[in-house]
Picture 1 (cartoon, rainbow, N blue to C red):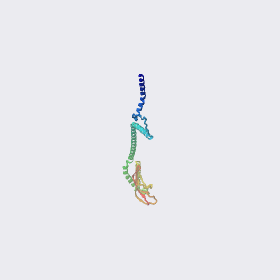
Picture 2 (cartoon, one colour):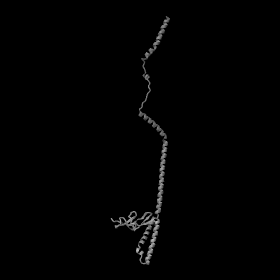
Picture 3 (cartoon, rainbow, N blue to C red):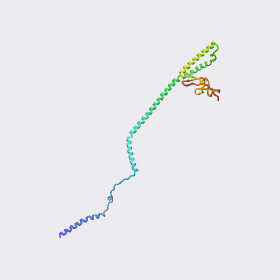
Picture 4 (cartoon, rainbow, N blue to C red):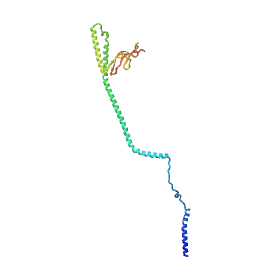
Amino acid sequence: MIQRTLLRQARALSSNVRSAPRTSLSRSQFLPVNRSLTRPITSSRWYTTEPEAKKAEGEVSATTEGKNGESEDPVKKELEAKSKEITELKDKYLRSVAEFRNLQERTKREIQAAKDFAIQKFAKDLVDSVDNLDRALAMVPEEKLNPQEKNEHLQDLVSLYEGLKMTESILMQTLKKHGLERFDPSVGGEKFNPNEHEATFMTPMEGKEDNTVFHTQQKGFKLNGRILRAAKVGVVKNK
């Protein structure tokens, strides 16, 4: 009896052990399930278009270049400042040299002009005396200079005339050495030049061109090529 009882208990126990897993599985079907835990884990991926990628690369390179440029800016700025300063100093130097040379040339011209025209006032006062000497010689007629009969008084006049003529010649040579020259436009029949001549009258004349100087009322003077006194002349005017 005891053995049968033990055998029944052993069979009942083994049947309980075998049926336990099925019961737990069947119960789990009725339990609530957390879907977030059962969702499969997938890796997230980001997608970009090509222009956006290039733009991003450009921004990155610009940022990198900006940082590099900022690090080099002080040196570049200093070099630019120095080169600008050198250019300005060179320009000032060239201007100073040019101004100095212009000053030298202007000073030379002024010194030469002072030398050439130092006697200008003296020459203006002297030409009146030369005119008087010229008038005195012009007052002697030619027939008295070549008398047919010998006359003591006429011979004295001829000697005086020759002495005055020699004095005038020496005086004009001396004045020419110092740049003062006398000119007579009627000798060569020159054309009227308002820069050198002063027309006192005009008259028609046959056989001569218009604006030709035919008479000199007062001779002119030049000092080193500059007109000291214009010649007073008569001019032909046929029309």
